[in-house]
Image 1: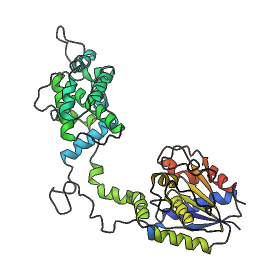
Image 2 (image 1 turned 30 degrees about the horizontal axis):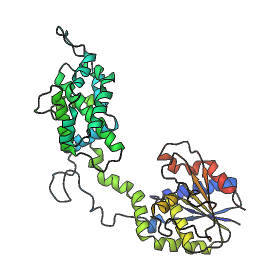
Image 3 (image 1 turned 90 degrees about the horizontal axis):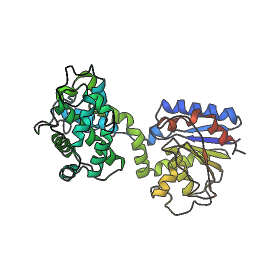
Length: 397
């Protein structure tokens, strides 16, 4: 009878592993009832923990545990400002959209000769033409990105709708300046630039652009407090900062398991090897995510003749090999001949699934499945996808 050894991925702990293994067992038996599934739960013994009780975590509202900064539940203004900008980097037009949706248009008749609201943003933004180079030089926000952002904003209908609710050109100029700088820095971030202007430089760029559009120099960045504090304009909360410890403890195993394995994975590989040697042949080793890395590394290290097939699902083994980070095999060393047939299952939407056939020609079969989920759900949805089990069953003798 064929034995299928299931190795879980990063971050899995009980009771989650039992649920995951139960789902794997049921899915495999549905297409290969003669195959005997066996679990390998390594998370409890070899998984990462915060051994110091979280002493490495900065405390909200302070520099360190027991240090300066006040109550751990405090929500400093700097945190609120950073979170607001995080929203703007995702959508530079967000504040303008919220203003446009916040209540009726500004009342009153237009003065004789005054531009209509829809044209006011274009008039203000036109004042930036040919003048952003100095702002870029002083603040480090790239001139090209500032110019492109200002041009794109002048062509958008949204500033005009916001202008109809803002009778004061200074408020409008400041919102436009924030949108331009947010779009410029979003472009910098999208390029994975090694250097990004800090908050002081960013605020200086906003102040300079607002002043070019007619706002008074003093308070250009901070003068929007009352406007942006209105209920409809309250963007991000401070929950992520206040709950950093809880979020870290919840998300910590997923990242730290990988780091711990790469640094100290020898004992885990020895345990897996010993388990495989105890199983009845033939054995199919099925590893998900980090479990696939562990399985590959173990099989690379030395022959395990009664392993018939290696199955990696949503795994990063090929990526680590190509990056020079796979412990047991360095690129461009070939895959040892004793490594068994290798089936590598991936979903193109799973950003943690990689291809192996191009790196190991004629040694790896890459098979794409469609979990019909976006990332990160795609990375955990393999085990409810019948296609995964069919691909495994098709290769069992």
